[in-house]
Length: 147
Image (cartoon, rainbow, N blue to C red):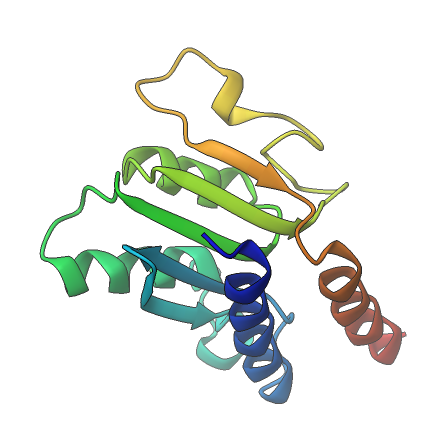
């Protein structure tokens, strides 16, 4: 897997969220070396707290392959998943997670807590910090404009 390439695609999706006023987080799901689903945050645009990039990408990936089990898929996301998204990753049996920037306020994959370290029925392989600086800068610029 080319983590750098696929994370760049997630960064591109994050840019779409930024263009609509949402927190710039993007996600792509890769299976057999191909992107099968992609999404960005849509919370502000849709007025729905559940419209996280990860959840949308997982939903679209399941639809693309016709199965909720994504054990042969890798999820790339620009920011460390929150508890809700980490729970969805567990429940969808995602095989691997690759994320860019750590989330020191809500990260559930090692920063604030680590749901994957709990004795649950599944835990993906995790790779942290891919294109971390780019992912973090996108978020920093967004939040600076709000201040």
